[in-house]
Image (cartoon, rainbow, N blue to C red):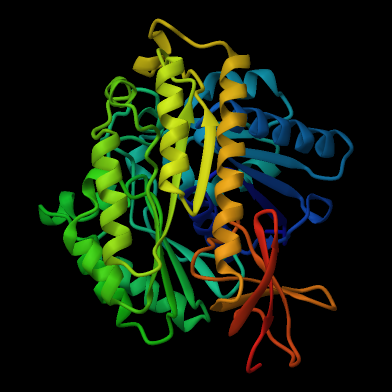
Length: 442
């Protein structure tokens, strides 16, 4: 075959990005050349997200942009996969005729054949069961060479009333510990120094294969890999943060004192309507426990405002909770009604303007919290991973900053540094969410 050039745009979460990297590896093995820009591509893959309205909008806008490239003759074919394709299989290709293939996530194994057919002018609509999505495989990393996401599982059994993920990704299924550790060793051998563990629910890991939660045991195995410097945890459910997991985070130097726990809300009434466990007191107790047992722990959470039936009192309770808890990092989004979920038909839906205003208020509160936290960091020294250099200053991250979603440290250094290198940085100031400093001893 001709040496076709293929590019990919992966939208949404890191789990989707891993799926895209597996597809790129399959294409590279088949003789495709991977490129970064649509201007250089013969075919573009859009690996979509379809979690909430804003993600769907971004996906549609990206597809339409690639359609314009095709109309202009810059690219020859468009393949759409990922969550939006899985969820709206009938509508996508009907509404955007420039698309050559719309495939479900279960067809990712067949990406080479799909792309070959698209380049030959054939249209493909292919939606095998989502259980055929490969959980692992060789990857062509699209992250910087020093960090990678490591996916533990896919699908979800939690059935939160607002969430369409189980409808899109299917039931929870997980990889063996041996498979995960083997991939981690291969990533380390390729130069990866930071691993970010991802899944729809990382704290559930082990329950399917081993009959008990095994995230803590997995972390211990990963810490045995010499080349790995940092291991970071995403998507931990509050009720499954076990004592064993806390002990491992506290004891293992390689496990960052950083934990991402999407709490969604603190009102017991709202949480019950979301089909989630816990309440303000249990969440407060967990946060206090984490902070008392893991020195310097950084806690990230995600909160939702405007869920059906969220009263002014519920929102006020959430605002006070954010003020009191002083989360190191917080993401907030307005409830998005998703077809097929129980909450879609709930009564007492809240107006979009009210939801947007509540999200804005919560963001303002968190900004104030961040200023207090950043002021306390001034004068402190943190080990920092170097990411970029603009000719004058470096940008990097400490243990309390995740790639892409969190803030950064901008700093100077008297000696030249390389991306992926670790250096100690003394914090000298801050502006908004970002910190400033200077490297010491380097």
